[in-house]
Image: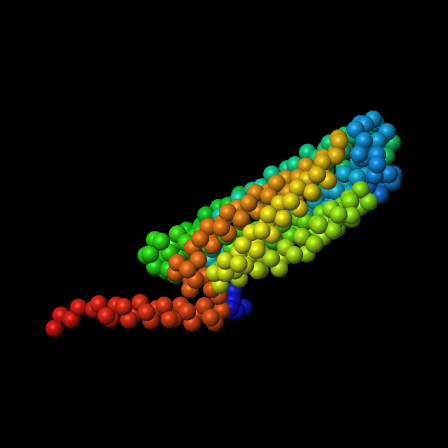
Length: 357
């Protein structure tokens, strides 16, 4: 079990680990602050626009008199995108600490890639904001809050890009620092190393699923699926699947560490249901003249990670019973098994020791 002292020890172990966690914390503080300000300005702008009937949004018309209505709906969605980005930054910092404490090279590198994707989505915020600023300028409604939000979005895009570059460099340095960890833990057995890497990537996908599956689904469910234009059946399916996500992710981790085929098959089946859940979300987010581009991107990323989780789960399950279990358990039980493994190695060495006398 990870203790507070171990966390502090791993974070302060080298100069690069200190810089990595410090930079991740600063990124979280700066971006969360900027996103919160942008969210408040978008909410103020939406409050200036008229209320609307949701049936209008289903029409294919793009006449000028519908611009305020569509803008109000879009700004309401942007607010939840801002909240999702805030959730991503909190999740990212937690993952950065997790990767440092467990010295996981794969996790460090994947986080760098996800951070770069976040920078791209940050730039899209600027483009989307400019689009609605231009459209609303054709109406008599004030756009002062949206104008302030646009300036903050430009600042946000620059900040995200700067942090993404810095974190990419630090991720490279951290990956070199962790280079020998698998060898030191497992030894020179290439077969075990290969199985361990597969399991490591499987666990990594489970951690990414916390954001791409659970948080994305939760934010979507709160602000969209409960609307009247979502059918009762769709709403209940999405609610049940979202509630089960976190328990099933933990369930999958225990399935891997205990090498339980039944549990793993159950989890893989559930992931197939999650893909159906994402398909329902995609169907609801496509609307004429007002597609929800950022959330659609989130959903496609979620589907890609979901498929990767399924594939890696199947590969990990194929390795059950092949000698990997002592290396993937945690806690007292894991330490006991590792100790027994070391004793077996020692006994084997003693058995084959050559007596020179």
